[in-house]
Image 1 (cartoon, rainbow, N blue to C red):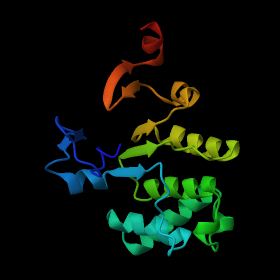
Image 2: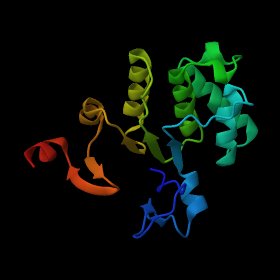
Image 3: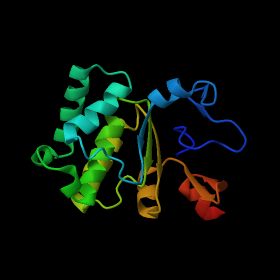
Image 4: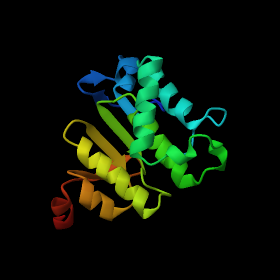
Length: 178
């Protein structure tokens, strides 16, 4: 996923997002992507609204629309009670929901989610997957998970990676047959 958003350089080959080579059109392709890393990389000097809206602004939203988007995702994810709290003091699961909201904040065409529900309680996981269910027809969603139950339930296509190489690829039924 880090390759797709340009955080690390590729060794060989080409990567295209919606037909555009990320090597030559990196800024343009990155703005089409919403990325949720596995690590917590929130700015602890900013509050929740600022963390989410800043990401939207960096991807083309004006301040007003970015704040509206942040508030929209805060409400959908049930984060209202944490708005005035210090992000450092929030649980890992709540911080993950903020990262999820940040990835969605600029209405990207492509969502790249690294272990999106790790550290979340069952209710929060359901909220995240319900949102993704609603978005799946309008967006390309790529997620990394070690949870095969999630992969089975939510993925149309599964790729098994080992040391950076695709070892198996296809539908779950095809992978089971292999």
